[in-house]
Amino acid sequence: MEKKLKSWQGWLLFFGTMVVVFVLGLLAASITERRAEIVSVFNNRKVNITGIESRNEVFADNYPREYDTWLQTADTTFNTLFNGNAAIDVLAERPNMVILWAGYAFSKDYSTPRGHMHAVEDIVHSLRTGAPMGPDEGPQPATCWTCKSPDVPRMMQALGVENFYNNKWAAFGDEIVNPIGCADCHEPEHMNLQISRPALIEAFERQGRDIKKATLQEMRSLVCAQCHVEYYFKPDNKYLEFPWDHGLTVEDMEKYYDDFQYADYIHKLSKAPILKAQHPDYEIAQMGIHGQRGVSCADCHMPYMSEGGVKFSDHHIMSPLSRIDRTCQVCHRESEETLRNNVYERQLKANELRNRLEDELAKAHLEAQFAWDKGATDTQMQNILQLLRQSQWRWDFAVASHGAAFHAPQETQRILANGLDRAMQARLETSRVLAKLGYTDEIPLPDVSTKAKAQKYIGLDMPQERADKEKFMETVVPQWLKEAKENNRLIDRS
Image (cartoon, rainbow, N blue to C red; front, top):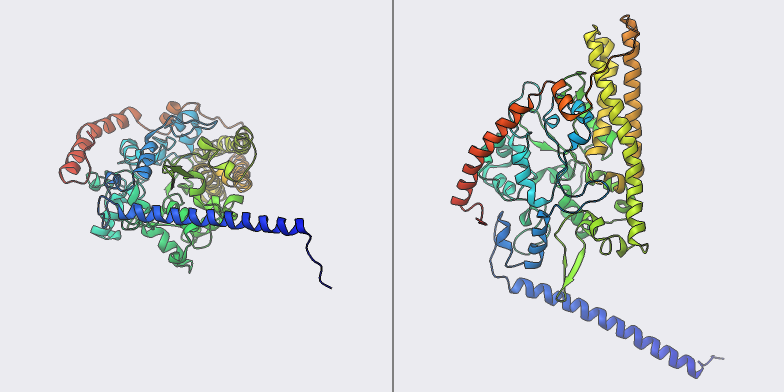
């Protein structure tokens, strides 16, 4: 016998169904409205853009909201517990880094990165550009421009990728003048996300993967992974390549480099063959809980916002802590203060290990130099140099990555701890070598407690370096800008 619904149950089911239909209707209307907005944006474009358009201002009339937020990347006023988006002289804050990079251009100048708007400006002003890459090498190659400007894909298309890389940095000063912007991540016709540089595509191909099959959500990270990754320049032609063939971990990439005994430079003091990490942000982010759950870079660094009923991505790319209500709190229900302190707690713990590692590793390099001076042989120093290489690679891998302590705190602390272990092993092994050479006293270490003292100790003539850069800025750069404006490669904002 069928059981009939009671009168109130029928009415409840009726009204429940109506609510569901109403909500679905609102959703459908919202989707239709959004689609109409997108169609309207493209139908009402004021400028027809084709090919690689590296001048970001050209996109302003078609996409004013995105462009206006992109302009805000020029702002450097935001600060957190650990820097923010202002340029901070890291070598002044942590002079041990001068010792760690002795023999490499980073020992001259290293500042925290600013917003995308400053990309070209900062590389031009840096004391590293125009400086030797390492022993017996000439000025920086054109490859150093690769991630700084949408002018790079344009030049790659005009010259060919290999011809672009296999050139000098100064050769393209009047060509690469527009800061990171629209064409770096978007194709111009429909503004779909695109990979504009070859290294990421080539890395996927070597892994047997087709980047064209990436989903939209994956592309919201992969366009960032064109640049925010570990990479190196091939010694013969400075071709840029990602060392991902064995995988994305610090050990995987170390194996890649070890396979052909690659080193970015030979340490000036210890003579260790050093690997210089770039900024493996994408790799480390993939090892953290957010990356594992499919959260993209853009979800946190380019959160959606609405204006006049139009939803768009905020192109003011910066720390998610600057707008927790639109980033963290989209998923997490805790207060802003709690979420901010959660981030700081992870950073503080990682930095505690980082500071200890920097101190031990700097001493290890200095003590290795002392052992050489006492007459140590290549055979005696071989294991020490390997330990120094491994330790510094782990330190640099963790330190060079932006946001590593938050993106993957467990992995970052594991890497730093392994680096600390190897630095201490190197120091212990050095004391054994010195004992065999008849030296058992405490090793005298130089005073490198400030940036100036450390740079003087490793033989840098910084007054001359600064004078050379000032002359370069006064004579060469104005001519670059003049030629760029005359040839319509740079829009004159003045």
